[in-house]
Image (tube, rainbow, N blue to C red; front, side, top):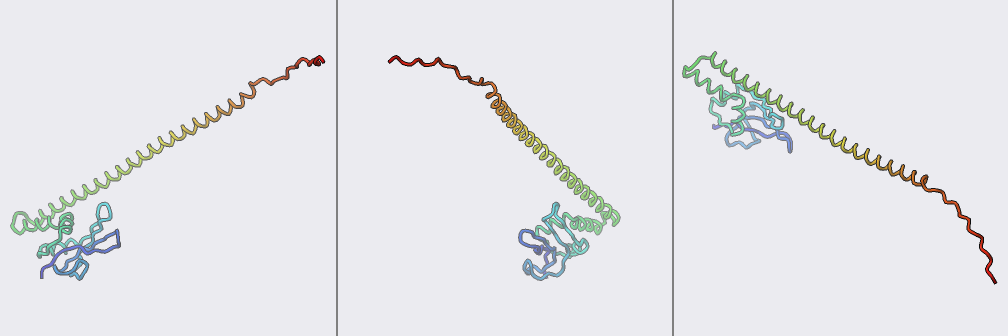
Length: 184
């Protein structure tokens, strides 16, 4: 029986979560499977992979063919590196202790890269928030300046309107000469 290591879809619409399963080549995507060896959640950043490393290594060594996505996941988790290193031990290129040392060095380098990436993302997010806050402060200052200018203009217009009636002299009626009766 030919086996494949594939993803089996779960989750809900718009939020897919996958199980990594061992299944017969002819089985449908979400059909029967032989064994579940892990899960994969691409919705998180970075994607979350929960993998039973020993079982995945066993199935790869037995000859189960992974799909392209699962192959990338297994490479990222180090399954193929371990298979390669075990091949070197079988050939006598190095011993089991060197295998563990090389694998641990690779794993620590990977973890360091991941932590650096997460730290950089957090720094970039903080920087973007600071820039957004600065832009908002500038916009608020510009709006406050416009409002202050408008209020100053209104106050000046009001003061001018109040000063205008005060400046106008009060008109006193000019006495006109009495009219002489018209000659008859």
